[in-house]
Image (cartoon, rainbow, N blue to C red; front, side):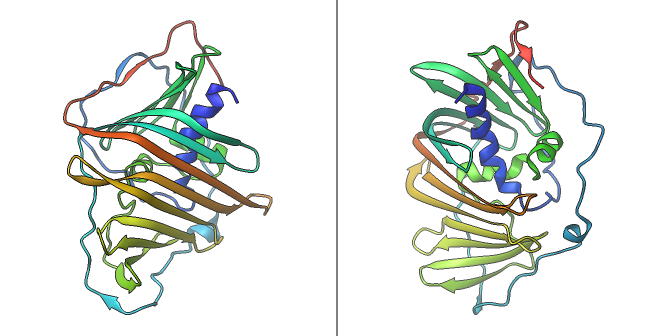
Length: 291
């Protein structure tokens, strides 16, 4: 598999999380420049917009009436300014299958995700994800590509946004608690049931540590589902951080074929830091932009 495909799948695969619904809105964040870039060529904004399914757009999920409601539970979440991680990423679908790709991650909360893919001790690709764009360099083939979220959403037939990707990586709840959400008790878990646009969402909060341990979401019109399981919680900077994330996505394609995708993100080291680790990203002038 080429380095470009690998690094693209690492980012895009993690961003499948927004596949089943249209994001309500992005957070408004005041940011200082923090990316060491000398050349990032932005592509033109797409002229056409993503076609909306009128019937699906009019469908709104409701919180199912199941279980005995209880008081709200405070969920333990990770807070940080900057994060660095050494990780391995695995991915399997009908068309792709790779295991334990080495990925170094750097993050600035609510603003930047920086990825470096290495092989045989050398960096083969680098990517940077911001709130408005995604840029990747293939250092083997000396080319690069630039996408905004609208372009990717159209190409992969699902909607993407930055906030949900960040939540998947760090193990926090991807959707804020809402007035219509309610907690019920199921075995060793407090389950927060939510209705988010067209999604019915169950957040399984472990009774023993009050961490999000599993998330299950179902899109009402299509019954597309995904589950996200967190494991191997370790203390990092005073917070419990999941060192393993298992992801399973089941969706219907445009051709009405069932497609299953599984992913695993396994961290070997995670640090929460107060100072910027740096986000170097320079596209050499000799690199060609791929369309």
